[in-house]
Image (cartoon, rainbow, N blue to C red; front, side, top):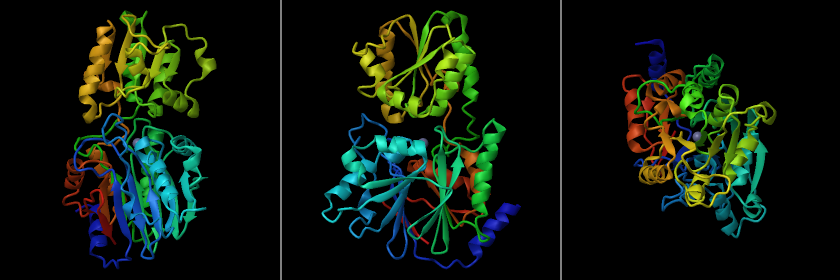
Length: 439
Ligand SMILES: [Zn+2]
């Protein structure tokens, strides 16, 4: 038995008086792999005081359940017990549920002057606020996240993690003598040593927050079924460098399809296009433009000297209706036309539910005589922001919580996560949508 293992066993054996805290999954723990989100957890203290971690919506906009948001029934709005909401990052499956929660408050006759504090980093709040009308925004008090803040009776610490969008954090809450780590979407190892150290530093710090260790840790389990480690986004730089400098594509424009919020990818692609391929970059789609501006992705001065054919970064990787590519296919986009002079690159992950309609989109683009390159045939063109199984196991082994809960994925993936910890001395617990654990 290794050192970590013995710590875990000792912790599990030590009498641990329950405090009566409840942790409930309000969304994101779907039974089947049908969509992404809506991620949301709720911690409830014995006196009924509550803290929410993230408040997501469904990303798959074509889904007939596209309005799906977390199940807020466990949230105590009537007694105004919700002390605050902590947002981990600006992806929509973590923030898009806020308008629905505001709507619930606005429909409550008792809600006058009830403002819920919402904590996040500057750019996360920018994205969150963009999701809602001024009318709904007034139910929230958006506050910049500090390293440590007191939210009601919860002491909440925020720590940086690595994902696929900047300013991603995880949280540790301390209340009633219990510590809970909420560690959503993140990666463990990166080829860039300093960023790798950042993740490791964060989890090591969290693990030693008190002598007796963490009581509960929630950990991303999106790719628990896959062996190995997720590479850094920089690994796709070489693939794009080859593509954008290939002689046969010298006189052709590239149009790269991805999620608007994949800002790390966009920044890396822009750097390669400008500095390696001498190509200027533009973006299309209102959400894409929002993220490009918010994260300062294009350095206009730097790319003013780029004389090659441009690279467009556009929305519609899941063939969402109204996206830049959708409008181009319909001949309704004056900034983007499709023809043999362009190469389209589908760099985003294909959400399983969207497979059929993405295939339709690819067929339609090809019917205009344009070439289409997808991440299915060129997997190196897409790098995930989620850690794979072996990395997740290492993360759990560093955290050594009393109870480890996989989150952010369907049943089979969370089960695969738990299987990796069999015999490790760390107790894993599956918590499905609407279910709670008490500790
Ligand atoms: Zn995310």
